[in-house]
Structures are given as C-alpha cells and as structure tokens.
Amino acid sequence: MKIEVQSKKGLRTTLSVIVDKKVIQKKMDERLNELQKEVSLKGFRTGKVPTSVIKSQFGKSIYGEVIDKILRETSTKAIQEKKIKIAGQPKIDLKTFGEGKDLNYELQIDSLPDIKLKSFEKYKAVEYKIKIEDKIINDKINDLSNQNKQFKDKKDEEKAKIGDQVIFDYSATVDGNKFEGSEGKGVQLELGKDLFLKGFDEQLVGVKKNEVKNLIATLPVNHPKKELANKKTKFECKILQVKEAKENKIDDNFAKIMGTKDLNDLKKLIENQISSQYSQALNSITKKEILDQIEKNHELDLPKNLIDQEISIMTQSLKDKEKDKHKTNNEKIAKSRIKLGLILNEYGEQNNLKVSDDEVKAEIQKQIKGMPGQEKMVLDYYQKNPSASQSLKGSIYEEKIISLIKSKIKLEIKNINTKEAEQIISKFNKPNLDRSNTEKTLSPDKNKIKSKKISKK
Image 1: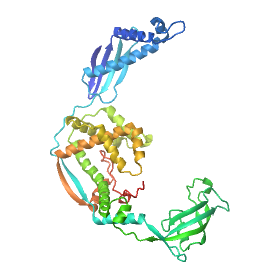
Image 2: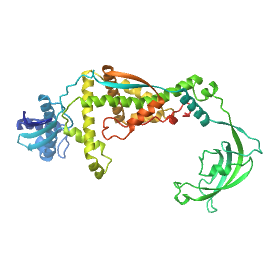
Image 3: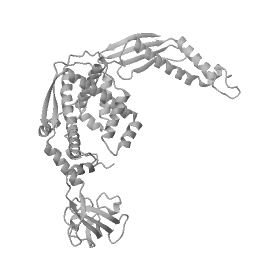
Image 4: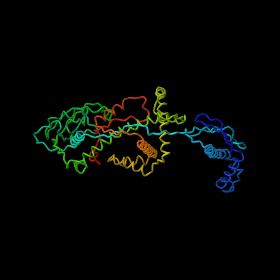
C-alpha cells in the first residue's frame, strides 16, 4: 500500500492511497475459497463448487465486498500511519478500481486541532450558597396542609360554603339526551377549586345533605366527543354529604402523614428540596462564568465537519426559513459548543478523568429516588434508550471536569438568601443572543416541591 499526503489545508488533510492489484487479487482468492466451503449450487455438492463457477455467478458482488473491506482496513491504517486524530467520519473518493487494476482512492480527513491548555489559576468565579428562610419553609408546609385537608361531616341542616367538600351523585343530559359518562357516583368536590366544570362549584354553594340540585354547566371545548364539546348540559345532583375542613395541626403527626419521621425532618426535607432547585440554577451561572473565560482565553481552529454536524443537530426541527434567518447566530453557537467541548475533553484526558458504569448507575438511582412513584418509568427509559445512558455519562464527565477546574481557580463563596437568588437568576435569564454555552436557567418553582407523601406511591 502506498500512502501520500495529497494536500493539507488547515485541519483538512487529503491522502492518496494506492492498493496494489496483487493484494486485491489475493483477497479475492481468499474470499472465493471461503465461499467454496459454503455455497451450494445445483449440480454440485456443497463444498465442491469450483471457484471459477462461483466467480462467474457472484463475481461483482464478491468484488464489491472485498473492496469495501479493503477500504475500511487501508483507510484505518493510513490514518494511523500518518498519526492523524480524526474529527468525524472521513470521506472516500474512488479514483480507479476494477478487477485487474490497482485500487486508487483519496481519503479526505478533518482532524482535531492541537490544543494547548492555558493555566486556569487566574480565572475567577462566584459560587453561591443559598440559605432558605424559615418563612418559605413554613409557607410550604402550610401549602401541604391545605393540599391534604381532612374533612368532617356538617350537620344535616347546614349549608355548603366555599371550602367545604360536597359529595354527590349526578345524572346529566344534553338536549334532553343521555350520553357516555353522563352519570357519576360519589363525586367529591372541594368548593372553590373549580376542578369539575367551570362555574359548577358556585352553583353548589348553599346545598344541604339529601337535597336534589339542578344546575347548568358547559362541557369543555376539548371534550373527547366532538358533538358534546362546548355544549350546555343539565345536571341533576343528589347531595349525599356536606363536609367542612378540619383544622390540620402542623405537628409530628402531620409530618408522619407526609412520610417523614417528625416535623423537623419534614422541614429539613423541604429545605433540601427547595435549596437543590436553586442550587441547580445558580451552579449553571457559575459554570457559565467559568466557560466564558475558557472560551475567551483559548484560540482554536475548528473542524468544519463538526461545526456542520452541530448546526444540523441544532436546527433539525426548524424550517428552512428559520434556519436562514438565524444562520449566523446558529453558526456562532455551534462553534462555541465545539470549541468548549474540545477544550474540556482535552483537560479531562490530561487529568485522566473517567466515568465508570457504577457512577452512571448511581446517578440513575439518584434520579429514581427523586421521582417517587415513577421509578419504573425512569428505569425503563434508560434500559430502552442506550443513547440516554451515554448522554448521562457525558454529563457526569463534564461535571467532573468543571469540579476539577473549580478546585484550581479563585472561587469566591457568596452566601445569599432566596430574594437575592431570584434577582441573580432573573438577571441571568434575560434574553442574551451572545449566550451560547449553556442552556437557559429557569427560576426554581417552589410550588412544585413535594414531600415523599404528596407524590402518593
């Protein structure tokens, strides 16, 4: 095999590769001999078909198979011999080929740049430590109490009011006709939440036990039966029970109902959950601060094929008009991502950082514990999507690299409260076309914090 550098421009190298026809013929003969043991043709016993007959019938496909194998083997050898660190898939351009001829092809390779890492010791960043105020924790506990009300029976003559629970059977008609789902038994509504149909609750205000109440409500516009969508519906409701909310005493017993051992444990759980959400957002800001300095202080030539590939992934769901409109910015974002990815990976390799399978499994288990009641769904997702596990492994690897960099730079620790955190996150979230390295961080939604019990396994 003869290998020559045809051209070299920037990170793109074109190699000329020539494989002698004698080598090709030898590979052809070897393959024909292998097939002779396997092929069965009419008039011949298995293993006794002459190679000349096999070649006459399957010669073209055998030649194609042999050439394909030679291309894979020789291109790999050429890249290794020239010590090229490839970026993406090389392109092969066949020049001359055919039985009885040398194989001559060009191999176009985009290579990874040589990266000279600069010291990170002069970098600065702020790492935020947040303190969750007692008021926020107590407000959340009160929310949990309201979400988990206990009710007791009212006296038969007492009327229902907003906040009470009404239990009833109903029979409904549209234009005098019954329909699928037009009857319900033992329906429970907490008046004022409007969870059934719009305006339904307010019509039940004032009802008493054993009363029959007729009311009108409109079915939703997205009703599964199109013919019933947005239809005025008559409901005949038989009131079975009217109940009022019992005052929830927030104590250790309440905490046990919520799935914790005592009230202090419940408060700690809520504090950790809220703190975790804020920390995720704030850590992204710190990471962005570090990445901006890394990008600014390193100059790299970038492989065009990797940039094109990144743009393709970023814009795959966009229409051509949208792609053209944001072409310049998309290219800028793609270049930034590729550049930072190469630099971080080089830093990881130089420091021999690795991610074990056990670390990936541990992270999956952590996600499972964070989603009570949905354990099987999370586990099935990773088992059925190997690419998801690989992506998770990449995220863990990146976090390892960032953690190591943090240990090398001047990191100012800043203690803040939730109000200050909201201001910092809000400022970070303002539209910024220049932001291209990290995903936009959203402010934590404290209302979505749940205790173990609330998720109801």
